Length: 619
Image (cartoon, rainbow, N blue to C red):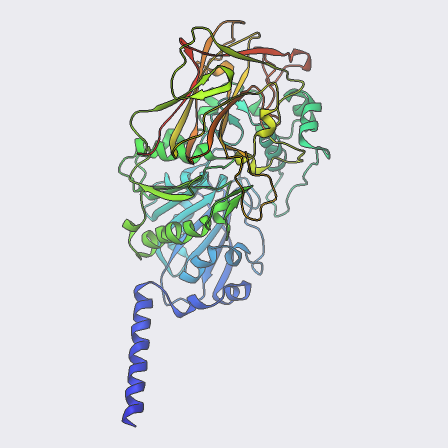
């Protein structure tokens, strides 16, 4: 009997220790339960509300509230132009149990979704890349005053366009907003996000997005608009056959408001500047966690540049940055271990979710954990496939390095000495260089790491390649392209690509694609030549006159391994990813097909005109 009592006491003592540890960790026995639709409906109630803004406009808002009312819970808000669907109090959002959001549900969070002004079930008029911070302020104020069991701490988050709204909410000034995570937020649709890069129209994304999301609505609705199917063939053929932007505008009619406004503003004027999120990031009060993908086809520019802007304009903000080897939004997947044909050797999305995002919000909204364990900067370096942490970005050497173009397609670290040396090609807009090999109907998200061997074989793409590397080289931060060139017409685009050339004997176990000699696109971007000196005031080229074209490519974090080579490709079309430049100094949005002409391009690699790429490396 004494033995049994002793065993019993030991059991309850051990159980107390376990429960105490769970309490310290902010956990509960419920955390071990499987979270599925039934679990969510048993533990959460759904409410649908119309919250009135200060100007009388009402915004449709969905609240998922824990049924357990003995505790206080933080509020996590997701504001979106893409709908709070599914509508109806009996229909729950499947991402609450199908994604890592279920970890928030287990922890006890009040989840809030809201249709932004002018979209879906909300009242008002929608304006692209324009948001009233007061909408977030008024929403938060209403929630903390009226939703029972909230602890007065609010977080905002969202991927892509919802990331833009999250950042706008961070600027609203409401004291209850403690933590905000803009994930891949667009900041400037002319300079580098979504629909333009350096003034060049990202044709396929712009047309596809606005003809779908830009459809007008007459009144608040829960029913999606009918999507117009503009083509049934492959994308290259469709856009080439349409010929001009003017023809695409005729195809859509006058219904797509932003598209029609956009074509009236071909240059970087005040209309575009008013939509630049970077102009208002002063004195940001909440803690900020910015997240981006190194191979994000949509908003790679936005995440890097929002971080740099807040760092400069609001130096006292608790600011963190994460960049992983992801395409748009893939950090939210359960398992992300490869991108296209490139393997990453670990579950990168799980690492981010467990080690960074969840601890970030738990600390700021629930006062759990230790924020010092989340580094200021966390970046995944492809090639070496390693997470690296830093106190600041840029982490590279203070002295920049250069790779110079040389004759005979050589790329080297020493500047050219030849007083007269160049490479030429003919850019024919009737046969533009495709951005991908093969045939596709829609833009392929993996193109940013895709094999470039198909482009190396084209006569209108010039290629420069280094010797085999004798040691690893890790590029970090911005890449700057400096191209000395002359053309035979009055305008041209320059596409510069930095490529990792794999050894001829390289292979992955079980991979059927021929990886030996793979040319992995590490970073590529386009510069519309007319903007080489000013985005506000475009200038024509003087035919035959040598000029410097200098532009920044988005930041990079990549290790070129020993035994690999570095390659640079230069071309003047990237279709239909980028619209065709008529190669004459005309209004591209209004010109006719007859104004598209071929242009001879000469790229110089000589002593006094040394074309190069400039980069930083890790110490």
